[in-house]
Length: 591
Image (tube, rainbow, N blue to C red):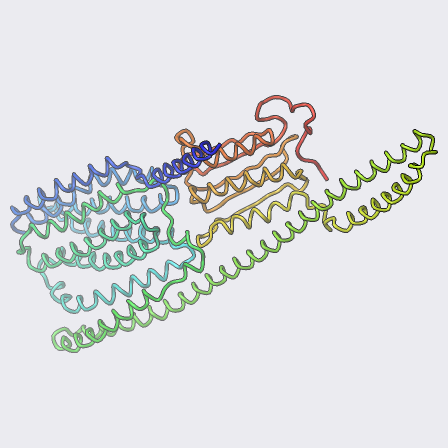
């Protein structure tokens, strides 16, 4: 017996470990990931070395475009597959990312054609670049929105815009005049604009990564690397344009190639299941910490005085410098005001959710206590009813004894006294039964709903509780044993949902099914391959309980499609034959 229990426990641990490994496994597999990394490591030195031959504008633009094409072509294939294989909730992000990647390829390809043929495709390249930047921004905002929980995405967007203004305005004052007057402004100005957008993207990527659980931030880390390398590469390309393409090519092309390489590695990190963000946390844990506000305030305290001094120094040489500085300061004040208002609204909304959650917990606690009280009364009533039946049977027996001996025995008088005493006791017990019965005897098994909801709420502790819908048929009245078995099956299924499903919604239903009872637990979680589970753990436990009620358990699931656990209790469904003699014909009845 002990060995069997130990084996079952080991099986459950092995099953949980296998499920965790499956959840962490990327869609493309570790082998494809390693091949992608090897491809980058092998081509990056070659691309850098080949760029040493680039002399002049056309040769440099050719090397720059080819450095991107080496990685964007395979990245297009990987990203297209990611759109098809990504978890359902992440597909809008990958679709927008694929569109941005196509526009990036078009922009670089147009400049390559111009450098090799002389055709002026710069308007096409510029339009494609603008579209790519918008698509990258839209994709990132989709990702932030999907991971933000109850937080407002507009607050993160304002933070990104404010940080970009603080970082880029001094640079615009320092290099703006030279950018506009440069002979190669067609290359330098778009590069500078790309660097500014990348700074905002870097802030959003960091904000998104901070909300992900530890151990699941590899995709976010690549997103941060992508934004940082984009800002660095675009910045150095702007400097190259200002210099008239006279700077050494290899270091600049190496940065460009490293940036483009992240486009290939990024989709290869696609997780098999959706990684939750702030939405996995309860409302009170989603309230923003003052860390971001403090960082922005420190950056403003450093930048604004320097910006003021810079504008005063440049006012004679650059007439528009004071106007730009004042505009940036006014924009920062306006953005900070709007951000404060939105943060207050967000905090009020989260506090309202906390209040509603507390009220729901109090309601569930009251219902659970009432259910326990009703159960106690019902048990007492059943015990007293059995005692009354025993008294009545004993009284009948004692009345029969005098009739058997003609009523002349001395015992007959004593039996008559005991009979009358037992009748008084039985009557007292009948009155007590009426006193201890629940006031609402029509609730039947509907009282199961409150304990199940409270159980789910208590299971998740400091994690976000999924939306739970519990439906118990109004005409269902289970006996004590069946109700206990149904409750245990539901609890075991809910534990599996908590440990493995990462679900946002759970539906529990208990209803009659012919002469049997159907218990159903469905979730919208990550699902799993039922044929690949070596140790069934909780499933085996549910089946063991179902067998006690002559029932069976079926599990329907698939990766990314959620899970449905259905238990049918009663009528010999486990064996497929009729119920054994002496067994009750069904487990439910209309009260």
